Length: 341
Image (cartoon, helix red, strand yellow):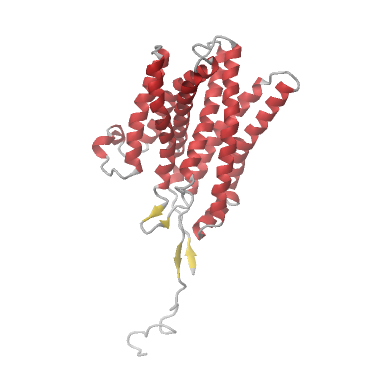
């Protein structure tokens, strides 16, 4: 049997899709983090500060991400009025439109609840809705791609967009980059001297950054373990999955995957955490710049992951054909018309 590999350089030719997937997952992560921190805060101020900065960060991220998606459409006006034009209700594009349509207003309302000082019960009610919606937002960015993973007949079409692994990977990445974005925002506002709209001292700001950093260690480890399982499944899967494994780990995408994502987004941030912890515990010195570097690396690594996934979608599952049985007419094949048998 001879495989014919199909390449269709379509997804990788635009920056809109990788950036939308990144920003959509990031917004889902910051929304989830804000809501969970708010629900668990109680009287602990540092968790309230984390919830507040996460809530403030979500609306601008999802607005910019939504614009990337909208202007990728051939007719952007259909994106703004999607309920009138999207009629395939089983499509993840349509489902995602409804998720985005609910997510964006809730994120703005939740940020406003913090800014205008709504009562805690009202805010907690919004937080309870924000947790599942934030997770759905990150999941949707994975399902949007994995909807093309199979075609009728349960056959693989885009091996890298595996619906078993990709949505969960995007949720973990969204939480990781969301924590990094929250921690980085805390450090930036602290440096500007404006605090976190309630975090009045540098110690308050530092505590938010530390919480985000330590929580991010957990998500980075989970993300790394999930990527390992994903690659292991590709390595022993179908012909298309094995070709994809080679493309990502040893082919043209390998530098982007190993250096852009694994080294930058996973390994280096863990190393930075170790350096910061050793400096604080053993030498009793605060190495603040290490957290700045760590948060930036996590965000860059999350973006590189989306580029690798989108670029990898250009490799389609190979078509398997039997070798030709009749290479020369009349020799081992059907008779040539006019010459008899």
